[in-house]
Length: 119
Image 1 (cartoon, rainbow, N blue to C red):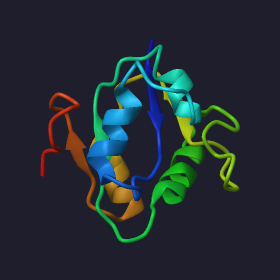
Image 2: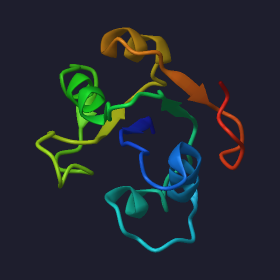
Image 3: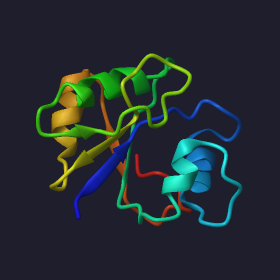
């Protein structure tokens, strides 16, 4: 029970839609850490922001410093110095707290994950 929060970037080919759609497919080759986990979890929502620079490390640092959130050490951060890119939270997290803390407009994608994000 509870919620897992995974942070990453989507600067590759196809952008946000391609990256999120791939991560939520169950029938895919396992390449990234999240590929292994996504076989066992059901996505609830995607929180995202459009920015010219990756914000995943800022998000990860913020989440790592929250007392109410548990980091999963070493997950998804093999190519950086972050403590983790995967976090556990026992209750449904609120979008507004993250948006304020990272000082960036965060949007939510709650439609079917094959649809385009809600602007």
